[in-house]
Length: 491
Ligand code: BG6
Image (tube, rainbow, N blue to C red; front, side, top):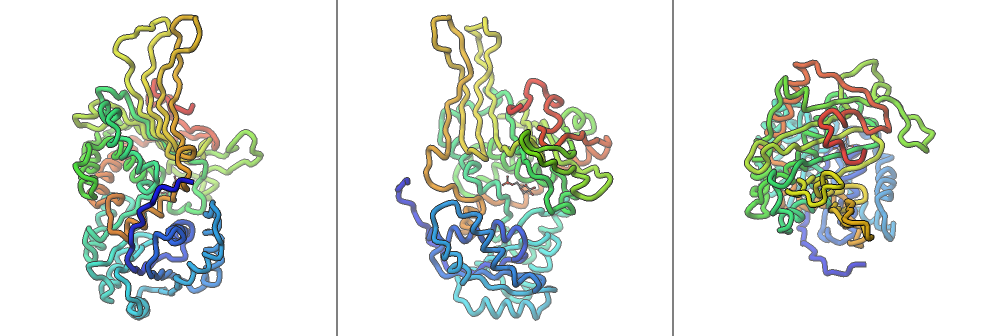
């Protein structure tokens, strides 16, 4: 065990009001995150969690579902009675219709406490955000110390994202709004900042002068699960690229911020998003691939055949993509003509998220007998098997002349750090409590991301761009299409 003293940040007494408090996301992510920070003693103060539900029906199962969900996340030695202790802080409140009477009940509850701040967590569909904000305001439940946390999807287009924001911003100022992109809470994603800005070696060669291309891949084995309606509207482009992949791209491509403060970092990310080259009817054909999964076997050993996307959503036809690959360019000084390959898909062969920085080859080949010398590659594994590899050419031992092979220098998180890696939501929720906005998206970032994404959506619509069908358990289509030379690493 690593006993390095951990600085425990003091968190002031708080109330968290979770709308959608019996929803899947809350049960799987939000309460377990609060629980782990509580048992780790990072939350030591008085706190109350109000789970707001729309129907009373689910109340009887609430605590048993929650217990089961929290138990699943305990991967270390822990006295399970702590779960019951934690439950003492949770109260269920039924708000079926967002009426003034309902909010009076909530107000009564909150007024009984002496909390420093109220955190309103909106884990409902975004079309309810405006109404909830209004009612909170009318009931005088919002003050300058209140915060609001918003879960995605924050709209399905630039216009709808602006609309949601205009409703919320009537009640909360930008400095009170925390838009969650859970990728930003992942340890390995936060490490991108340290990797780039605490290592002269890398930052020094971090541009198109030295970098040939960048690949950002998020491959998943799961299908659309129980979210058919949502996914039919969003597809892989909106579900993954508009937020998670673009945020990763920003962290890789942005200029060093002058300070590690929220608006310094967000300003730099915004510049990247605004420099993304838009697609048109011509470039969309060469620069994107989209696909949809058929049924198939997820791995060779598995007997289980999984169903196709159409079976999963119970329809005969759909143009929604479950896979997308994009060759993107950032038109700025640093990244001129460096392709950024973004790829994500469901029902792929393996769950795998990684970023590969492909460096250029050496200027002059001293060892021509082996052909072209491959460039170095920096492989950043986000999940699972978190770690970093630097692929470098190494001489093969022996007297047979200069023969070399690419060999990796490896840093494996599990071997190097013995502590448990906290879940993304744990870090994000603590940041909300501390009022730290660096890991949350600002509205202008969101709008710039939407503008670029819409150039893709429009390009697809205008060219009647078709999905390529791929078997579940494969690596999806498009590996050869975008650029043969840069076929994805794992193939
Ligand atoms: C969510 C998407 O935002 O991220 C899901 O809506 C996706 O479709 C999930 O499965 C992936 O998150 P993670 O942390 O499992 O990589």
